[in-house]
Image (cartoon, rainbow, N blue to C red):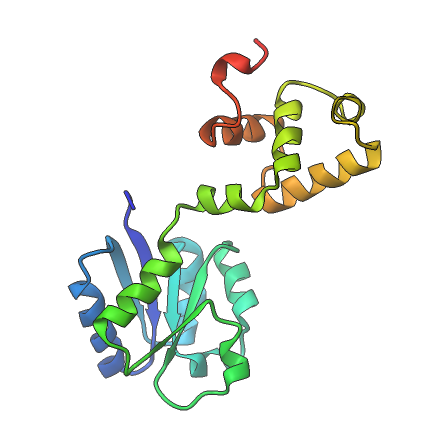
Length: 197
């Protein structure tokens, strides 16, 4: 990754927090900025301004919040939440997390888990989620075609085109033609010369 990954560790125990920090600083495969938080009140205050990519937290701290609420507070639905398991935990509660790190994991295991979560840039993940038909519709949209013209060109019903456009907006979180144009150029769906002048 070309930019540092922002990681926030939420653990009330200074010993556990220091141990995780020590392991993270020894990992040389990931460029990161690590912040530590000792209590849940600090977490609520800092989520908005720190905008972390990864949140490593003790599941016991979340007695009042859900993972979804944390992501909403952070203003980042792409935030990855990792449970720091230091005791026996209910497996059902751990399913809400994107990954689980145990205090018994080796540095190599922790490295693999973190690398797996941040391996691909977000735009690559988004591109994978867009279907071939949706990519065709994106190209038509940035060429300035109306929904009706797209339906005629791709031999679809108007309702299907509208549904695809709604799905594209939802998946990519892009709601303008200018945004779709940038997405299409970056992901090589069109060349700059293909766009109407």
